[in-house]
Image (cartoon, rainbow, N blue to C red):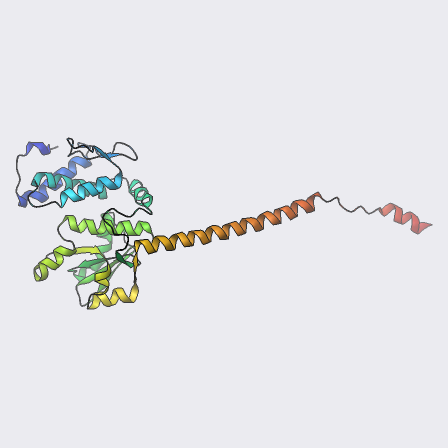
Amino acid sequence: MSYSSEDETDISESELDEYVDRCYEQLKDGTQKVKLSDDVYRCPYCPGKKKLVYPFKDLFQHASDVGKGSQNRDIKHKGKHLGLVRYIKTDLDKEDLSSKLTGLALEVPPATDANELFVWPWMGILANVDVENIGRLKNDLAKRGIDPVRVRPLYGGGYAVVEFKKDWSGFHRGIVFEKEFEVDNHGKKDYYAAQHLADGLYGWFARGDDYYTKGVLGEYLQKNGDLKTIGELETEEKRKTGLLIADLSNTIEELRMRLDKLESNYREPPTVIHVGSQKDETAE
């Protein structure tokens, strides 16, 4: 049975989760179309806006921003976009998602300060963790399209550290990881605002202030990571790329010289030994 989200007039905050599920199912069964081509996507819930189509990462950003909007925003409108966020992360083609994230390689998100300090290698933080269920966390995150390398529990503090790949795809997965929790009002600010009333998991991307925090979390980050800015990492990557190109150029030059030598040897006429003449002289 299909539903039309426009059949509803108003919903309450308590009905939001059910409404998100309904909108998600409409996207999943194709009632609402999102993907126009391999590179162009549309938001089916904002037809009157000037910007009708988006690149992949911009559509995700748009849906996330609307979904986590102010409490004064129409709840139905938020619910639709939260359903879109879930659909993007769960049901869009895995290879398509991976290629889009890879394509973002050196693009720093607009909201990211190039001089902001991040923990390197990339790490995320989970708070209010039940260590008894830590084994399921990695699979749950992977199902959401976050795909961490591993999840390490920090016993005694209620934290776990999520490790991402040591490349730019890992950085963007960390940003997605952070947005995932912010959309659900379970980000970093929400966690510290809730204090002892925190309910459920909270998560965010590890930054400089986390690195210097007191207790088991700060100790782990300082022991296993460093602080780097995006600008520093980009400069380092360009330097390594330059060295790699130089090494490849040297290798190619060496191979060219070897081929020239082989070709030269091939062109030299072979030395002819007149065996018959030598025999005749010996006989005389």
